[in-house]
Image (cartoon, rainbow, N blue to C red; front, top):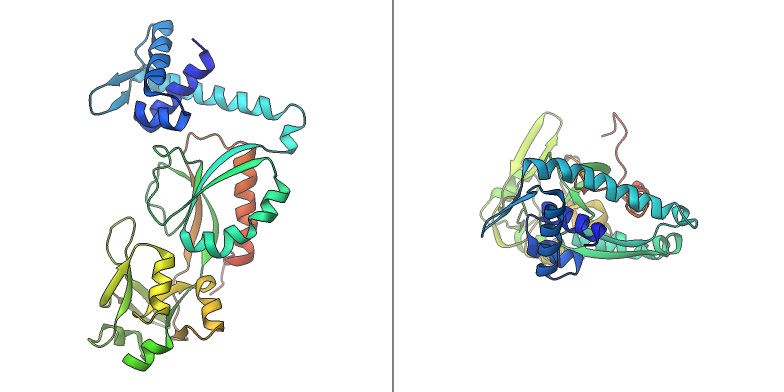
Amino acid sequence: MDRFDALQAFARVVEAGSFTKAAQTLHMSKTTVTQLVQQLEARLRVRLLNRTTRQVKVTADGAAYYDRVVRLLADLEDADASLSGASASPRGRLRVDVPTPFARMILVPALPAFHARHPEIQLDLGVSDRMVDLIGDNVDCVLRGGELTDSSLTARRVGELRLGVYAAPCYLERAGTPAHPSELEDTHHRIVGYLSARSGKVAALRMQRGGEHIELQGRHVVAVDDGNAYLAAGVAGMGVLWLPHYMAAPHVAQGELVPLFEGWHFGAMPMYVVFPPNRHVGAKLRVFIDWIDELMARHAPIAALGDA
């Protein structure tokens, strides 16, 4: 038995909750992963996992052992990185998931600069607006907007997205330009619905002007769960939409979108880099998070205390 492979296999099974998922992320067969864990248990003379036909659960002994194993694997990674100047040149595969519009408009265009700075990091980029299972999908980190709902994850706030309401000129010619947000509830107006990955429902719009607060749901004829498709539907005139400024700005400049309700304010959407609580923040993940921090500081900085 290769003890390192066995420890890796055990840790991945605990994190994924499945021998099949662990095998996929380790690029091993399920049989190999099962045998490695069984050999580890035989050597320790302790049951680490309880298996049923439906799920795998860690035992009390297994949970305590897992905590030690994770620290050991992290120490080994740091030890490898400390040799031959590797600590100054992070290397290896990094699995990241980011929202589709952010990837297309901000992150991917900036990647050449990241690669020039860290040429030995292989970035496997998942681009989606779905809720990612960081542990089950074996993702190192995700970038997501909105307040966090899972307190078991570790997060770093890296930016804030300023929001606005927009519509295409062709939509305004057809439906008229609303002077007050409440008009979006009128029967002749339509919004483009954005389906929340958390709830599966169309997200509401909250805004204020002075002491006046309003929350809008609106009516829609199309709702999507992807940011790029959402923007495209708005530009096509399918309804009013609310967008981060970075997404709207080029289309406003080209005359494809018109900003509405100037003087109204929207709560900024926080942006977080999120990673599993037991995931070691090694050199490659650390430099990527720092780079995202720099990127967001240019495009969506966190407001200073007292800023509007």
